[in-house]
Amino acid sequence: MRNMSNIPLSSARISALCGSAAREIVIDVVTETGSTNADLLARVEQLPPRQCLLALSQTAGRGRSGRSWLSSSEGSLTFSLAWKFRRPLHQLLGLPLAVGVALAETMASFDIAAQLKWPNDVLLDGKKLAGVLIESTAARDQGVWAIIGIGLNVTMPDALAVQIGQPAAQMDGAVTQDRALLLARLLDALAVAMNLFEDQGFAAFQSRWNALHAHQGKAVVIVDQGKTLHEGVACGVDANGLLLLEGSAGRITVMAGDVSLRAVAEH
Image 1 (cartoon, helix red, strand yellow):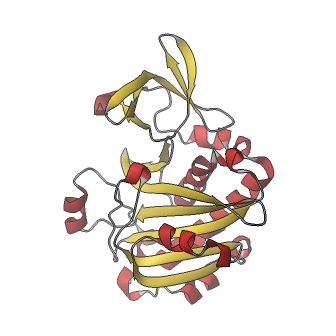
Image 2: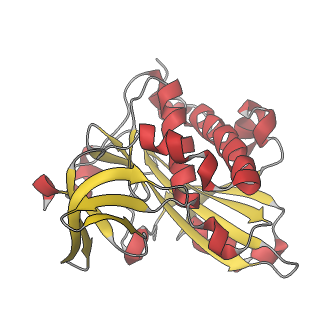
């Protein structure tokens, strides 16, 4: 196999590998930046309706709740997709979950059995493979801009594993040899998913998400800043992307916000 670092990760090559669904996405690649989400948010009104920004190195990547996202220039994909929706902001509630479905199903096409952790993580063998951070802002001419930040571990260099300090997944096989092809496939799936979400909302993804749910039927706790808010059995998500939790008082729904889900064994 060819060394992954020898295969160009350029905008021209990624665009050439994209299918028809992603052909309207303008792709930019930069050597280094702080945060691709922050870069797109800073110039959102000058963007085309669909813009992807990939950074070979991201020095200030962010996850949910202000956490850092650590990555490597050799073994990660860190990119943001700016997408302009006609839907109002409150109807984008399930968008991170729809993005997760697109990511996990793309992984499956490479024979990688990824699963989803509510609300915005992609897991492999119980360890984090990818994370999603979506930031939004109102468009001047109606609608909403969603900046969809994605960090994906392709391979895991030893030094990065030490930096992260907790279990993190990586991919195996031929998919690791060509990140440009992987990104093109991801953009194809994301474009299809975003168009479907625009038309039908999260309801179109509910059953697909539940089929990939890593904690289905398992005991979990919902934690906010170290404090347990709820505990019970995870029963998937509803048509809005809210977690269904079966507890001592019956079934409740949980909104994402800044809360985190943990398996009881992890708590």
